[in-house]
Amino acid sequence: MIVLVSNIGTTTFKFKLFDMAKGESVLAEGAADRIGQGKSAWWMTAGASPKVSGTTDLADHAAAIELLLGELTKAGVIKSIDEVQAIGFKAVHGGPLSVVRVDERVLRVMRDFSDVTPLHNPPYIAAMEAFAKRLPKVPQVAAFETSFHQTIPLKRQAYAIPYEWTEKLGIRRYGFHGASHRYIATRMKELAPSVRKIVNLHLGGSCSVCAIEDGKSVANSFGMTTQTGIPHAARVGDFDAFAMMKLLKQGIDLDTIWKKLGKESGMLGMAGSQDMRDVETKAAAGDARAKLAVEVFVEACRHYLGAYLVVLNGADAITFTGGIGQNGSAIRAAILEGMEWAGVRLDPEKNKTTRGNIEGRLDDGQGRVQIWMLPTNEELIVARQTVATLTGT
Image 1 (cartoon, rainbow, N blue to C red):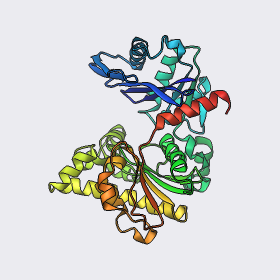
Image 2 (cartoon, rainbow, N blue to C red):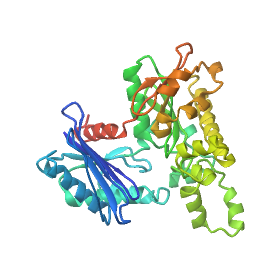
Image 3 (tube, rainbow, N blue to C red):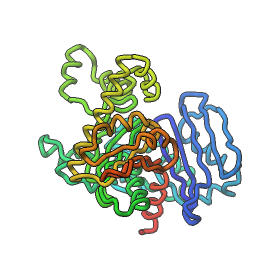
Image 4 (tube, one colour):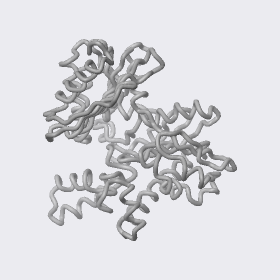
């Protein structure tokens, strides 16, 4: 089955085209950014062919989709766009939905949850409608990031709020980054079959920690929305809701508060940059705010790591993925510092030299807990889920 996996951002469109019948091979991948902002940059690679790229005005996601679908046929990856047999979406929030074929009911639920995912659900809905118009006979599957976390016990999902809010409004902890955490669980089973209990740290522009037991999620640091948990590049992470009363009394309106917490907080708000590499450089040069930002980030990671060691009654492995998880050797070392009591022993040399898109084991072999750095592959998980949903497997 030829599956196109679509990853949508507010102003971005990324895709990978898989031939699932031929070893899950990637036929092509590409992206466009600054959609709706003028001078959008786009690129595509196909097999061993040279990368093609350009700059153009893409008014909306439909225009980006049209452009990149055209580039696929130009490059000869497929003779006709009609060869695409399914479209899978790494969708974000569908409330109680899991991995489902897209129809009007699914779009309606996504609209219902757009108020808590205003940067994610609306562009996904727009892209789904654009694909349906361009390829009306091609089935679409939404693999929601929350789906992997539906195995989390209710005692770790429910907030201590009036129960009717939980029951009628669906206000609870959902968990996100499901495709990434599912991939790590799947890959660890292949690399180390004896490992049953994993704490995975997905650290990048968006961050989360997940406790995994026997391939299933049993706890996740995200809550009702993607704003929660560990501080992110530009999002606040955990924040006391009642602190907003203080902000409101200072005359700051609610829309400004949402914008500040959702787009101008995290590393950006604390240190002036949402790139952890820049923040670390500033910290090393003596910038007190940047140093504090790194410390706050590390402490939040350690907080959830410690909590999930309790949830799992000890882990067999701790894994790192995402841009920071794969490249931030100093961050990894800081998170795991002084954890020998838990059987966690990091090898300093392995930690310094293992980075980028390679898999590597980072422990010194003397502790109870394996430590791994693993590049994630969310698109492959979505492609597999798409095939499974459409074939009933």
